[in-house]
Amino acid sequence: MQYRRWVAVSAVALALVASACGAGRRSRGGSEDASPTVGTPEASSSSVATTAGDAGTTTTTAPPEAAPDPLTATRTLTYQGVDRSYRIHVPAGLPPGEEVPLVVGLHGGLGSGQQFEEANHVDEVADEGGFIAVYPDGTTNDQGMYRTWNGGYCCGPAALTQVDDVGFIRALVGEVESEYPIDTDRVYAMGHSNGGIMSYRLGCQAADVFAAVGVVAGSMGGYDCQPSEPVSVVHIHGDADQNHPINGGNGENSLTIVEFNSAYDTVDQWVALDGCDAEPTVETKGDDPDNPYDESTWSCPDGVSVVFDVIPGGPHSWPGGTTVIPQITGQPSTAMDATRRIWEFLDAHGR
Image 1 (cartoon, rainbow, N blue to C red):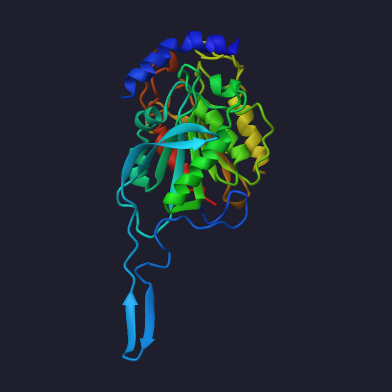
Image 2 (image 1 turned 135 degrees about the horizontal axis):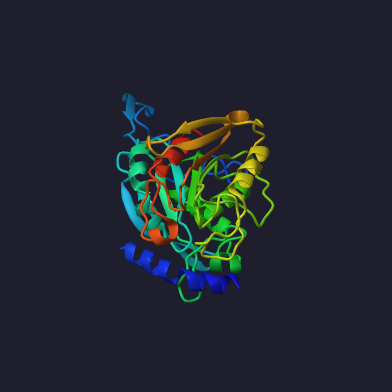
């Protein structure tokens, strides 16, 4: 059984991961919605009120809208009667009175929001890029173990019990938008492995929320993908991945018996879904001159694009990140800093 093998193979990995971890302008149904309840758009530094009275005319200028207070914290959101936890990072120095992007970061199987946040230095990139980041936690089994996402055909307890993770993440985005001035045309998701599989599901089933997604070492399957509008995609995969093989199947280090779909086939599906050109532009790139990667870019209508970065010899781990289970995921590639690479792409592909 899938679950039995998941439990048996992943016990060491779980212990290592645990030891390392110390509404918007446009409603999600497509109709107009109330603005986020953060500040008052009319009360900007240029807002002027003029009052006429017996003593003459008095002009007052409203005070400038304050920037959101910086924050890094763990919070809880109750969804369908279940308390779900997530991390949130609000950078210091966000521009007062301006809407900012939101990035949802999704951990891999057995990981956590905090592990994803720290291992891939996403807060640092958020500080540089000026976006708010949230890192939700997947659900566990009855013993509080094996945290995963229901990405469709994978993975673990979340998929076996058909957890509504699409609905939960929609609710999470709505909660953040109610508190902070989020640009609803610049809401994105990025994820690793099982989190990448979940990111693809969000692109398929919550395209009204997410303008673009970034995936490392994932694929999609288990449902019919019919996005309500085009979604830009950047996919990063090592061709020596032994957990989620780039050509599909079950790798020798896989923590589940799932026969993964091919990353190439997944990218081809998005090229068709987004109506892109049949042939990509191919370039060789790389942060490390001794370890380049191959980038294929498809141009699509309305500024949408699909990008596939293949790292020769790359393993399953997040490129440029850190891992506490190198014996299972491999040492992270130095070919690129995947967090910065994905943010660069997302930042260029709002709606």
